[in-house]
Image (cartoon, rainbow, N blue to C red; front, top):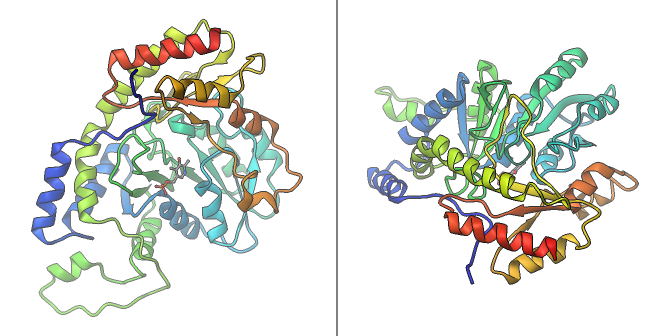
Length: 378
Ligand SMILES: *Cc1c(COP(=O)(O)O)cnc(C)c1O
């Protein structure tokens, strides 16, 4: 029997060597590697600036702050997302207002967002669901019309693109994750991209305790500099050891996505005739990283989601449930009592994430397809 994990990061000797070299320079945080990773990431996505932070959740927190979201404000976001999407709104004492997702890409639904705008709405936080871009132009138009700020949770979307441009270049607050479950990783890590200089400067400040001079500037100066702390900030730094790994991972990103898409296309082709499942679709102009490959079990399927997952595991194949909904988690159950999001709930309850990682051999992909077919056709 084969043993197939649902995901694994692609990390090579080069990453280990770069981390090793960085350690031996003795400059292990807020140094040249972080600066280099930021420059390369900004250039890769096509934004003016990028700021490296400790993870995507802290990236989102800083995005909320610089967007001016605070007490009494509402931010519209999908419930169907990892819970960090909603939590970052709570961190600034604002209220997440959960909108539905659309049935094709499971991305936040523009028509439902419009219905949920009130006089308290300050921003819309869209999520590029498991790498599939949300329809950014539609949300841009809504934000322009209602004078709202657009923020992108692009945790899974490094390397994805929308209408020919990489995610990270379309709006001024785009937040990425480098957790090992994403396409590229720095262990933990995150990035905010922006082309807005004021946002850029404030995010840099807030990431490091609100300190007026960063370590690099002070270190390189031949004059004594006494720093001030301009506002209450945070320690949301990425280390240089992580950034060194990130630089190599970024070089690999397009190649990794190409490999992921080959595997996804085999799933698409070789599972297409199974009438009891629905496969992901990539609309024209949308390009997904396939951070995950999620299938939907139609209601006519006689097996439940957990049964399918268990039978796959019995064959040595790990799967995961699809994307969660935040409004049904204990942390939100009280404030969301009575809230019904049937589309999101159904999509979440009936989805299964199949194994997808690089390198995944042809035999492994064949094995997953064979067993899924056997289980569903029984
Ligand atoms: C992974 C993920 C996050 C959290 O990223 P971290 O780097 O672990 O903080 C936030 N939002 C979405 C949609 C995610 O998938």
